[in-house]
Length: 83
Image 1 (cartoon, helix red, strand yellow):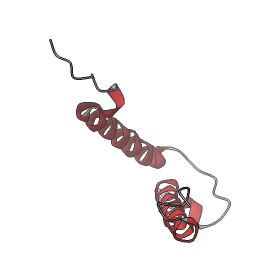
Image 2: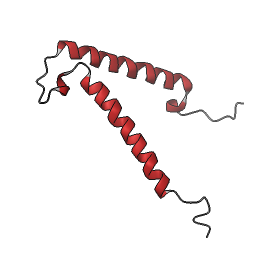
Image 3: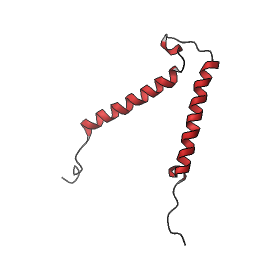
Image 4: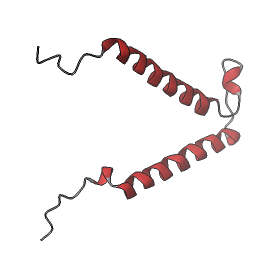
């Protein structure tokens, strides 16, 4: 009898690989759709090709850097609750 617990479907390597593939395909389709959809930019820069893709990437990267920076100031020692 196999007593090893079955992994949740979201943490299986095959599922993670498929989620990455599907996500990248959706992102590529959205960037390609930028050619077909006529936009009405409010500013000059938001009319550039793939603006929302690179803006979203830059915003996500800025949030990660900001969270890491805040974490430096907010982290405590491992023995914080033991004292």
